[in-house]
Image (cartoon, rainbow, N blue to C red; front, side, top):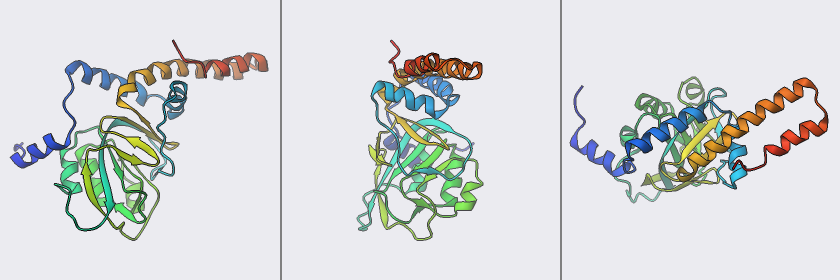
Length: 241
């Protein structure tokens, strides 16, 4: 397989977060593996326990199946003025991304589409876990048939009047902050964003939530008294020590 051009390697170094230690990479991979098996509701309950915000509003799945968990890479778009402030276009940026990452794009909730089938195929070929935008997409039916999860505000036929101004910078998407390296969780219910520094905390709480959810389902099937059921529900709100 031919090596990447030097310019591409330089761009990747410039746009990707600093490499973590092998131990940190292993811990992150383990957390992603465990969180991928959990419904997003468990993660939401865990974030609520911890007082962490991080839910996207009005950013909805194009596909109504499947889910993803992956670290964020980000792009910021702004109203177009032809200033040419970005050092590469979106296709070049996607080429620098690593498999399993989630591309999150801020447009300021611009009307119109920011991506279509070709860009989604490019992200899928690169191995992205998902693509998320607070604007719209075109080629909606084609994207809906693809494997890569895509989240947007819906379909559009007119292009959004924006231009790319920031690569891998903190962004706001769907009303929540997303920094490069944050963990993005998505399924048909929507998207939650776990701050990178709190991934282990959220996982620790989510494992407890999972046990209580199983206990609650068992209690419902057994027809326990409301006092017994309410006691289990109350435990779900208590921070695991």
